[in-house]
Image (cartoon, rainbow, N blue to C red):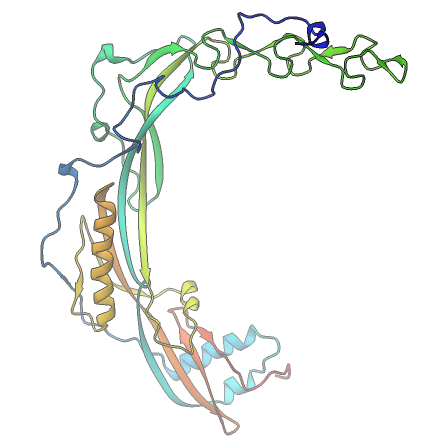
Length: 364
């Protein structure tokens, strides 16, 4: 230490330097085995699927669109395009209305698996005399035995709860129970070297106006006290520790969209609805069988097996739901002025997609 540092004054050795903001390793007992805070559900909470079980679907009826509906939908579409003339839509002659069956679960096929996951970790707060629910009142229950009210099904939610009988009071790990810590800005001295004269008291052969020639200034971080109130215990010297249980309810969704119409962009299906003609819901659902589109049957098997393998080992599966939605899609082919054109009518809203249109003028 040089003379200039000694001029800044001494510090109180009874006030400790700042410790870690979180309890260091070994300060608290391990809440769980290993490094992962996840608690897998006990075997009684894990449903077991039945072997070789399938789900039959009802007969599919392909929705159709009449010429009047297709013309009205195109006229409405043209009205939203100021550069398009409505004359071709009024005078067109239909050659073919070809219904295209599009199946989807929300966007072709959808599988939902509603899960509950439980994790735990230590939490701490300043102890100010609040009640302490410690082990003297009994042993802490296992994580999955703590009752919590279930949210609305298929809604995402996170809830935190203190594990009963897990609380205790311990000296603050940051200030070692002192309630305050040495200021790191001035190292507990309450003063800092003047930044203008660098502690000499003079600048350019004149007395320093910043420090009035003293060579040091009051530390603005601690207001000259040399210490600060502990930021962890807020001066209470002790911390209340307890185990916090975090319960996460999540609706895990997988979608599948068959791509079989290269002239129609699949993203358009995101903005329309269809007819959810098949909804299957149970604790566990089973692969679809007998559906006209074998690809959806295969995807159903793959997704259901994948969800069970992914979620059953770490979470409790509360419910599953699979839906097939039938979205109307009609390819309308027509002639105008001796040329062939086409457009698509899709969704129960009868939206229109037209890559080309006969006229691009504003004359009606």
